[in-house]
Length: 77
Length: 223
Image (cartoon, rainbow over all chains, first blue to last red; front, side):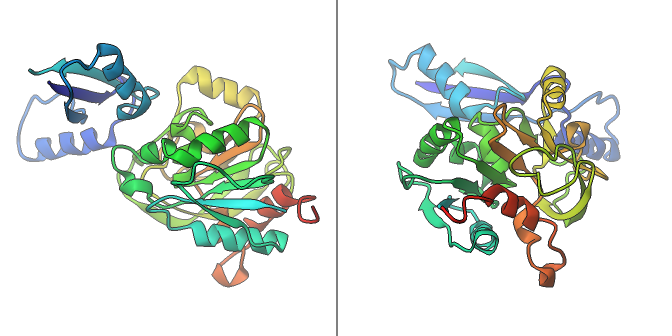
């Protein structure tokens, strides 16, 4: 079973990386980009029977820092 | 006096930390590897040094916080053993839940390596009583992820309870409310981004960090 974990900074948390990329896009002449936020994609290949609870636990214990980050679990196949 | 310095793969300030502890106490600290599951018995002090544990992969300090030795560190911290985390050690302490908040990429994006001014915000802790409240000291910083973040409720609580140990005089990294170092509720765990262990020898440019080690180890040296 393939799982994608999308980790992103919570709204309101300053994202200096996103801000720098935003600035670079501006510099390249792309108009109308209102904001850029950089996140992380973690792809897992797990045993078919892996429970939702186990996936949530992986996110809460290691993959995301819930002080500053949100996460979303996506089952790909 | 029995102090221990934990070394994670990627720690690079562990020797400096050991030198500072020996200078302050006269006794060389024990060295502990991250993969050990138990700490030496009867420790009086535990130090988590700076560096780049596990290459800072995933997030700074995230993997180290889940290494076998950290379960023992959390347990000892709960028993009141003083724990000091510097730089990457601070990141490990927040990731392990021993301290609130998180350390994010510096607001200016760049790695900062220079000496900064700190104000001693609380001089009544076991780490800071060698200073005067409001005293300004000069301590080096060297970090990329030193931007302290916590939500407003947490920050209010930290300030209200006197758990901000140090503030930046001229905030170099965007840290909320200029916070450079915070304590746990029991005030026996201190995490700070600046490196006091790099300020213990006049030949290295200053000795303002020495009082922190001397105070924290005071009374333990003869034990």
